[in-house]
Image (cartoon, rainbow, N blue to C red; front, side, top):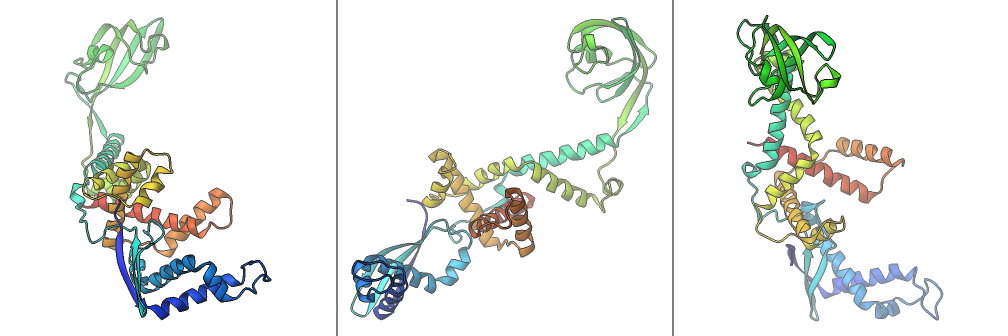
Length: 361
């Protein structure tokens, strides 16, 4: 059985009777009982006919009233309907257990440093984006030496009855093959007849991705000098400093790499040594996922939700309203239901928690 929090509730028997009577009076308004007009059946008769159901509902409502503060503590992460168990009654009092499927806030401790895979993927993408910015803003300087990997070469090409006067390409770093292997090591002014396999972006259409023969002349060799990654570089990009540039890239990457959230959920699951709440697993299985996968995902989400509650991560009204408006516009409705609002709130909280976890060192 999955994790759940148990609260023992106690109270006076008279309190339970009053709550049952109040519920019976509410049901009486709509009850249709043979021999009585709608809404005219005696309350005592309803209490007799619906006694067990009324008692269970009365106990649940009394419990919710008595542990309202606890319910608020776990909101909005109450995964299933509260369950009433172990009901005991005497002449003067009653007691029972209220079972809540909630995150184990007090039982687990999440270590952000162990959230490796997802964080590493995101950091790698940020570094890729920074590298692209460096490449775009690189300075090209002509050199007299032999060309090597990373250099940009300017070529005059003759072959297949065509003459290309100034084609530019970058020699790949590392292991090279075909055309690029043949031009690496040439200086500006040198000529060479090349027989090799040509790249897919070669300027002569009939040779793209195929073997052939051309004659080339190296017009120029330029070394690519990347700008340093510092505050001055960031300012050239329109940011106050390098940290602000990285922050902007992180937000962009997080939006683009939503799939890597699963890596973080998996990392969280590995920090938890307890079964997830049954209702949380069942909800994920309704999405079509197999049971074992659903259990693993539920374990990670349970840990993430516990982290949210422990870190007191919140959603302000403006954030929620913005998300509600987006979803309503997509659905073509004026307003979404309260259930959808609750789902959106959970979604925003989890997104904020994942972002926080990936930023913590």
